[in-house]
Image (tube, rainbow, N blue to C red; front, side, top):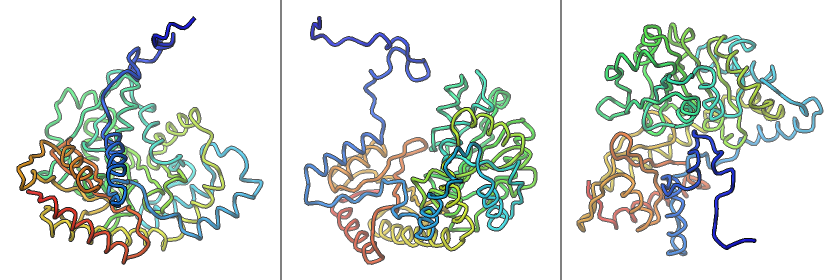
Amino acid sequence: MSTGIATDPYFQQLFSDRIGGSNYGKGTAIYKFEKIKRAKRKALADYPHRELIDFGIGENDSMAAESVRQRMAEEINKPENRGYADNGIASFKEAAARFMQRRLGVQLDPVTEINHCIGSKTALSMLPACLINPGDVTLMTAPGYPVAGTHTKYYGGSVVALPLLAENQFFPDFSKISAETWERTKLLVLNYPNSPTGKTATREFYQEVVELAHRHQFVVAQDAAHMVLSFDQEPLSFLSIDGAREVGVEIHSMSKGFDMIGWRIGWVCGHSRLIQAFADVKDNCDSGQFAAIQQAAAFALDSDDIPNAVREKYRRRLQKLVAMLKSVGFQCEMPGGTYFLYTPTPAGTVGGLEFANAEEASQHLITEQSIVTVPWDDAGPFLRFSVTYVAADEAAEDALMAETAQRLKSLGLQF
């Protein structure tokens, strides 16, 4: 008979240590994105007639190109696409190889050096399984996407953060890594164009990475999810650097550059033995993305006008955002790539309010003026603005910029 007193289920003691063990589900810490969601809900409830201006969304606001959706409509009814796709269909891998050659100058064997993935997130979650044993180290830039680090810890490894500081042009300072850490390092995860800083890589930086990988004998995983969205230079592939193919892989996604966020399709490419290891792990995790999606994605990869249009749209929006923010006092410049703008936070307001960190500044913008940003305090207080807000045309973009400027001015921010 129930006593009315809440008790833990018997399996509370059975949760793995990697997700919290017996304390799983009992923590009170709130992830910053959950804090943002709660603040958004409160702003909407408190000011129902004030439009929420959402610069926090990190996903494309447009559907995939009509031609890609039409191709998907055709492919979905073909019986040959009905079954398991396992480690990818030949036509997708071949299209990825053509894209790498045509757009990035990298020649790859589609059979042995390319494998599809169900989005770059799953690839980053699987690569540690190929390499990490208890005690091994994964080096990761901070701020950054945490998935590879999370899975490194699942396998008993540890993560060493490499701060991306403005004084280092948002490149990691490898000279700060100890000999003991180098000895234990199995994997270095990079991400250029970098989310959230917007920095693009240079050939010199990649050459340094290749030299370090050979010297210290670790694997490089370069997350190229924003590759197409390069503004200050032509997209630069890690694999285009001499010696890079001997030390690592590059992970590509069709989410950002092709407006295919929910389609969950990308590819991993590089050294054939690493691709084989990834494929073996993947075989034990999934049975492949739906072949019709792969066929539609292959069509998109052969259509250069699609990523070109996506890139120019977000370039235009970023230029408008930078001009608007600078007009109200923010210290920012056009990013080299991505659809994010990463800028130092305001110090406070003319009314005497001081922000201790980016999270406080972000919460103030949401609470007082329903302006949503993402705070980053990993390497100094910065706010991330995304230009993936919903706007039907350029006139709507301009109206949103004008409204945002008016609201920001009303806050009396100090820098």
